[in-house]
Length: 272
Image 1 (cartoon, rainbow, N blue to C red):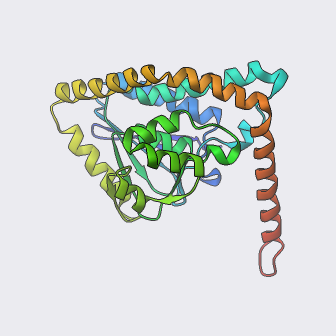
Image 2: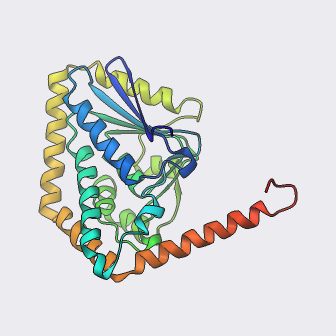
C-alpha cells in the first residue's frame, strides 16, 4: 500500500505531499497523524527552513475530512468517541498553527473544508486558477469553527459569512481577487512557483525569519484565545455530532455519490 504522505526535501525546503489521489487527498486519521508527525519533525530539523504542502495528482490539493471515516463517529452514546475524534483535529490544527517556520501551500486542485483550513494556515498560497475552493462543513451538517476564524482573519466578516454559510464553491481566481490566494500559476507551473517562493523564504536570515513567524503565531494564538476558538470548536462540534445530523447528511451524500458512480458505470460505452 502506498504511503498516504510523501516526504521529500529540496535543499532547505521540506516538501509534504498528501498522497491519496483516489480520495482527492482527503484526510483520514492516519494521514492527519502523519502530517502532525512530519510537521513536528520539520520544526525540529535545523536543516529545514521552509515547509511546502501540496497534493498528489492533478485533481485536488485536499478535499477535507474523509467522510467515510467521519460518518462513523457516533452520536448519543458515542459522545466520548466524538470527543476523541475532535481531539485529533485539535492536535492536527495545532501542528500547523504553531509551526515555527514558513509554510507554503501549492493548491493544485480542489481545496475543501479542512484542506482550505490547511491552506489558510500557510503563510503563502500558490494556486491553479481553476482550483475549486469551498468551506464545505455546512454541506455535511457541521459548524465551521476553525474555518470561520481563519477566513475572517484573511478577509472581511461579510465575505466570511458568505463563504461559510453558503458552502459555495469559488475559484482560486476569485480567492486571489479577495486576498485568500497570493499567486496564480498554471497546472504545469504551480509547484515550481511554490518552490521558488519557498526557496526565497529559505534564503532570508533565519533568525529574523524565526522571530517573524513566532510573532505571527503568537498573534494568532492570542486572537484565537480571545475569541475562544478552540473551546467553541470542541463544544459546538460535540453538540453537532451528538445531534446525529452530520452522520445522516454524510450517509445521504455517500449514498448519492455511490448511486451516481453506479449509474455512470452502467452507461453504454463505459467500462463496467
